[in-house]
Image (cartoon, rainbow, N blue to C red; front, side):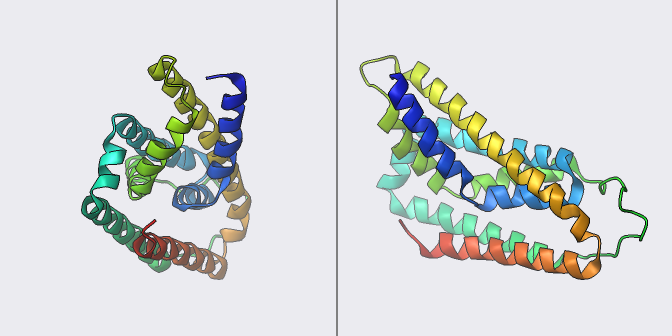
Length: 209
């Protein structure tokens, strides 16, 4: 892999990672509710699933999913169902008004394991990530050079860019937190977030390619 190819990969990954999706929305909403520490836990869950799926793709199983549409469709619909469930849970989440003098109050307590698990499940809910890795990464790998080293470079580059965008969304969530201290604003935020998750679920369920 030459430097030009690597920079092309950086540019394309930067754009793909910046695109809002379920992972980014989850990180931002958790940051808005619980603070940056909670968002980092959620990021860790997301990245665990993403890197696992990319490793599986490197082993050739992404192509296997593509070859057997029934398996892919089953995973896709299961992922859509989970996103829909998450959206309904966000929509129905209880809210309470913050005290008038709580402007500088500490973020609400959170369950780290629950956030990590939710991040992992949201990231794993889209099997297209596996197919994306199977189709995208090989375009930047020179078959005449050691492939494992090249895959490691691409994976490290992808991780740095993806996590950087997670932090951008997390900071955006923190900026929103001051506006979420009133019942009507928090309720609206929950319903918008829930609606977007349900929208992602519908897209995943209906769009086959």
